[in-house]
Length: 295
Image (cartoon, rainbow, N blue to C red):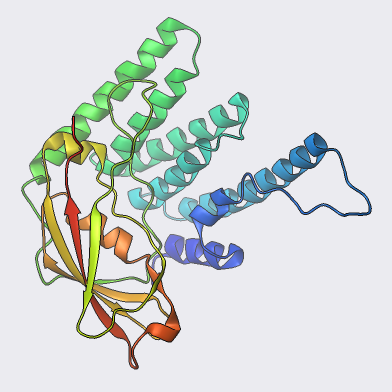
């Protein structure tokens, strides 16, 4: 991997176990209490959260520093923004803390858009960050201004997506899985405070012999914007599982516009029991069915 930011993110992931999601998943864990000396619950929880916030901020600073080394790289800046976006969803944050992470995410997306004004991911995520910020704003005029700016970003993102919507990842495409996992998908683009209900594709696994036993499952997300665009259907990929139980490579067998990447992003994160993997590795075929939810 040659990209310095991705190398930095990999180093961060190794330092805490499983990458950005694991960093964010740390929030909410309660430190083990000594049987001999037990602190009050609220004090213990408060101290633990403060420690976790400090750890997150250190990792964020490392990621910011890596991105600063390549200011013209829109993807690098967007990765920083997605890091803050995920943290801002932590229900344990105070309103002030959430606002701070949202503002940092917006600033990172501004840098991404300065590098590439048509970077769709940055347009979409800044749109979502601004809408989230609007839900916290008490001044109706300020809230309306934030939503107007988000609407403009959303419209531009949809225009660019429309130009790409008929394109699918070519069948036969090989995807190596040594890059970091993708950032989380954006919530629905419309509205300010609508609750998010995630929709997932159903997956089936087939193998020439016995399929290895899955120990970590990540479901393909059927993104709200894709559902609204009317895309549905079946995606088929072939995955090579190595002796460690990790997915080493994914090959596209059957592709669908706007859907194939979601299947790849999920399957590449799967893990299997090494004891059930065939000698030399296993090859599995995964079918992901993307079916719109009933209205």
